[in-house]
Length: 138
Image (cartoon, rainbow, N blue to C red; front, side):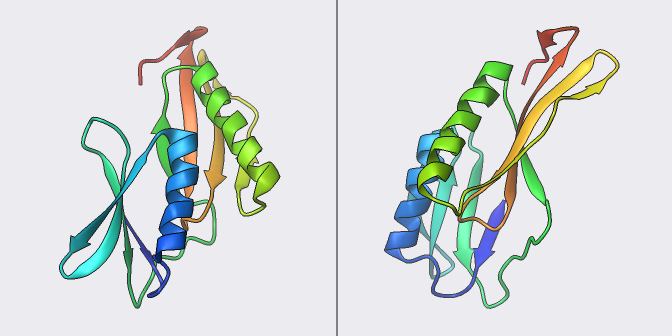
């Protein structure tokens, strides 16, 4: 996914802040790269080749509601660990936005989730699914 920002946003200080939060919370790695003559920042989300490209644009992305990207994890403990790291960050940075949810139960399927938004103009839906009390493989 590409996420665009107003021109002038992706300075060194902003990129370092993004790397610190998303690296600590999700284990992502930020790398500067050039794309069609523009300095961009790529957030590498793991070993599977997935990434989020951060770029500047005169028409930047806007996500004023609860638009989000889903991050499916294998267990409730993983989701809770990430939530706790987000809470710790929020204690020192009030720009960290959290939306915590009660478990969503549909028959024997339970979705355990929360939303987090920080620095990037979109929420991340961090969740796991359980069926009959057992994790549904991510």
